[in-house]
Image (cartoon, rainbow, N blue to C red):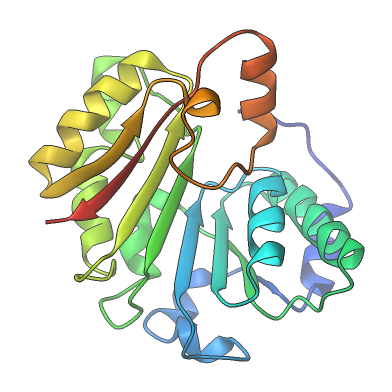
Length: 220
């Protein structure tokens, strides 16, 4: 997704106590950065403008969350949306970290000692051209990377997309990478398989009459 530069983003991010610009320095010790280390840890890869993670994390203070993106302007908008959502609920931002990370190099930032309970992937780039498909966040190569730090017993991936081809091919990717599809739907808003928290893209696609595809996968 293209987004225009936000000149204010760098300064605001630097001042935000819950933002980390270099995600590699905390590889293996993410849980120690939270107020309550013993809580479940969830990761959103490609958080965009942050409305999804802001709603989710502020609604579930019993869990810890990390939201990752690599575009500074996106992260700046995420930071503002997170602060606004927590302020509305009169909550401190102590269960959410916003980080800058290249998803293709995720193992530079996460190791097997981090133990993530759940990964969220929402409306990622479908990379439809054959030579680019390996860049998909649900490609077999990426899924194998996630298994390095995703909890072996009960670790889950929640995936949503508007793209039919990406969804169908992702079903194959998950199977080949050793995941079980425990739930799936081709019309999420009429067949909710998880909590109904929507992204900006989700609302836009729904208004256009595009059905949202979704699944929950677990490591076999």
